[in-house]
Image (tube, rainbow, N blue to C red; front, side):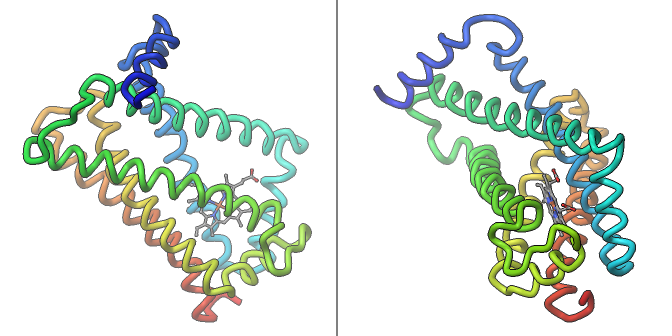
Length: 231
Ligand code: HEM
């Protein structure tokens, strides 16, 4: 079966209703995207505690693990997992449906900008998914960490980033996060209906500012450890 035939079969299998319609799935993709960008922003702010030393960072990690008598972290993990799963599912099925709708593809010169944007979204999204699995194995589970200690998240952070290859991968992944966030924030504001030319510069400033802030601060962590500033 060709990709187009598989996609048509998939679209038929999805049947009717909100999640079967491309508008419904775009709304789900936008809503889960907002949840994930919100998490990434809060996570970036939380990690700034690393600049305040081992005591502050470890108390913050302890707070996350014990909030709501330990249930908080599991509620939060369930929400993140569901948002990530729905986000990837809607992205993949929308892409396949789009391909089925135009199996021959546009002539390149007609569609350079949007093809470039959607292609980068797929690549940056894929690299981010690989990064998240690695990141969980590195700093949460610890099975790919050189000296993981469940009782000392600060030491895990420092020793983890002292490995240049690991830090390098974090930096590349943050650049992909930047591409993904920039285009994602820009498109989500469009999905929310802010398409009037009057809002364009506001949307661009918001997407660029938020992306530069998150990516810049995230990249500062491995760089600060490698430079010996956080030790
Ligand atoms: C350089 C940037 C980052 C640093 C320094 C960092 C640091 C950390 C640390 C130290 C933990 C473990 C907390 C603990 O167990 O006490 C953690 C967990 C986690 N991080 Fe990051 N992170 C970064 C970027 C990201 C990004 C970009 C994402 C998502 C796209 C992400 C998603 C997660 C998730 C899902 C967890 C697991 C939370 C849990 O369920 O326990 N992180 N991160």
